[in-house]
Image (cartoon, rainbow, N blue to C red; front, side, top):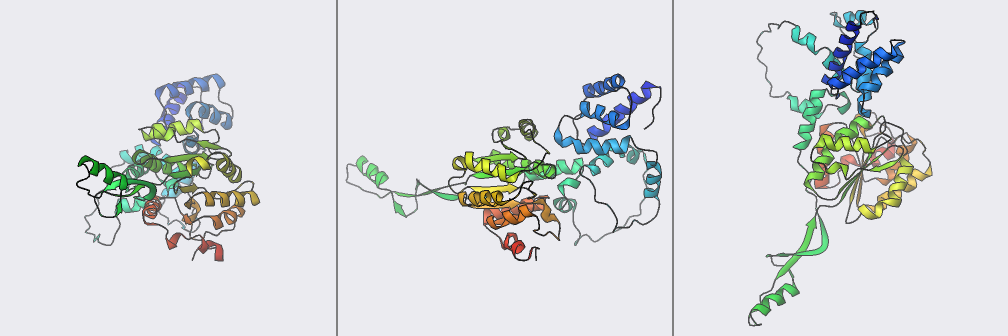
Length: 407
């Protein structure tokens, strides 16, 4: 990072940096840019860390934007040796795929926003016309369905949100003890039959029929918002917002080190406003994880209120418990007995070699009915189909309990 006496040069760099953040998906307005310039003038440019936290305090207002800001600051206010690294990246040398590091969360969006101007200013290349047989290829939508949420660009996340809004919702229904009138022959309704006979003075008695009323079962969601789960949980909340709009009795709880009920916040019409309300209501977003204590709080305070009439529970967490012990197994067993169906959604299943070695995973797996992934659109579509059709052998948790690794 260069430090010059020309304050206009620094102000322009801060403006360009704010534009990069805005293109990467952060909400940075003109007032925030002005405050950032004034804050830098007041605090001065000391070390790189002081300059980092000065801009961070002004420009970052949401917890989920920390990863994007950190990656953008690293690329924009770069060190001197990055030029040599970029020259090496653009050199015509084949990269070693085996030693390529995994991308960080938000790195793809930041790099796309940062180098967007260079891509536009590049002269168009004349490409030869090639006819390709695309019968066995995949379209862009198919590629988006299998893309990890943590590695999506800002445009891909927007497309994923639209895809979630148009997703086919589950049609699961359960029979209640209440009845509704029907014209089909079946169970006779004595009261309706006698009311009809009284209209004719008892001269004509026509039987009336009734059947059990079918309703959507309550859907209870317990979503982990710790540092390793925040990106997946935020995308999944868009799917829950669609469910909340189109069906009744959808209860959403977020937990990290404590349990927070955000059902009322999820009822806003606008999905972005609903998620902002959820973020404001939660104090431990991207913090630690205490699964056992939060499940104990849910079983003690909320299970009798929301786990009635065949409720389905969706537990979204990676199972990396901070405390561990027998308390987690006890609370999971109690939760499993209180609901009709317990589905565990774990983003770690995106790895082919996943093994149930963690202590928290071993304590939780025996008490769930299904064990599914939640890292992309295809996984959420499979969840919607599973809620409609029932249990599937592909999501049987016993596959991981027997040998520790999926077959």
